[in-house]
Image (cartoon, rainbow, N blue to C red):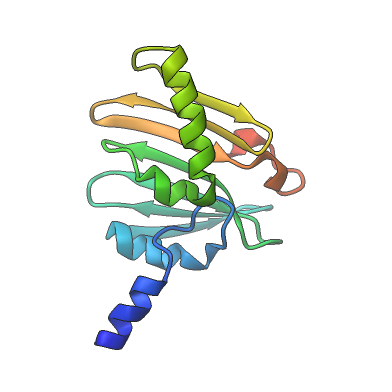
Amino acid sequence: MLASAVLMMALPAFAALGEDAISVQADQAHMQGSLRTTQAEAYTVHEIQAPTGTVVREYVSPATGKVFGVVWQGPWPPDMRQILGSYFAQYQQAAGTRASIHAGRKPLAIEQPGLVMHSGGHMRSFAGQAYLPESLPPGVRAEAIR
């Protein structure tokens, strides 16, 4: 029992943007949700529905095995540090710069060469998407990440 607990702590909590998709089952356990996998022609979508109503979809390239896009929707925003992984600092910096320039609660749009993210909502209704433009599989357009 202790060995399995230690092993679970070593696994990543989310298949974060740009990272391997091997941790999708850990995501499901972390969110205590149900997992549904859909195969498209150029990618796989792992959709996790949490009991809270939040849905997270992770888009994985079969060629690289990496998450190239993440979408979320639900009454609660997901933990951005978990779903953005190593891109969290870039998001945090862009969001902080935007907050200092634009006061108020407006949708967030980050469009940088290495990260595109759109996020917005209000109490009990949050949605957003983040993707890596350079990691889109051949033939896949950004509009497919929804």
